[in-house]
Length: 164
Image 1 (cartoon, rainbow, N blue to C red):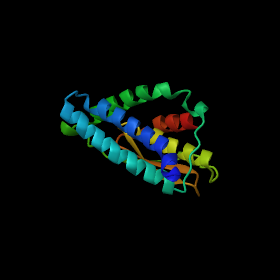
Image 2: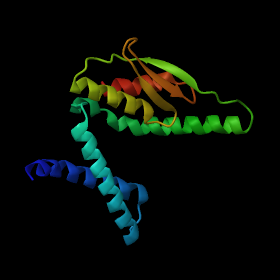
Image 3: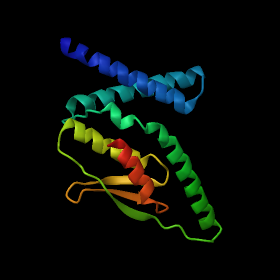
């Protein structure tokens, strides 16, 4: 009984956050949608808590990493415009779109909870805009490998630098 109670706060947090995300993404107030959202959130909470308790990966975030996060929406808007412009050029036959790979310098750090969180945040930062997707961190070469629809490695370097 005690063992189950120690999971309750985490389960509740997963459930509430999942339900808030559901409401944010669906933005409907129909009772049937609410029931579906509650069920989906329960499943998400159960899965999240199972992963949290069985995972050997620990994360320890630092608030200073988020001090310039307010700039992320600007990057998203800029990249959205860039991607739409590239797609229009491609659709009209003016210029073919070819994705590119970029190796962004990134010091991966040690194997501890803080550095694991920093690497995860860097990959999220590199993937948050519509132009880029982080593939992973090459710890041997000290780079973050990113695929971009339109080549703009500077935008990814800027976001990765914010997460350090």
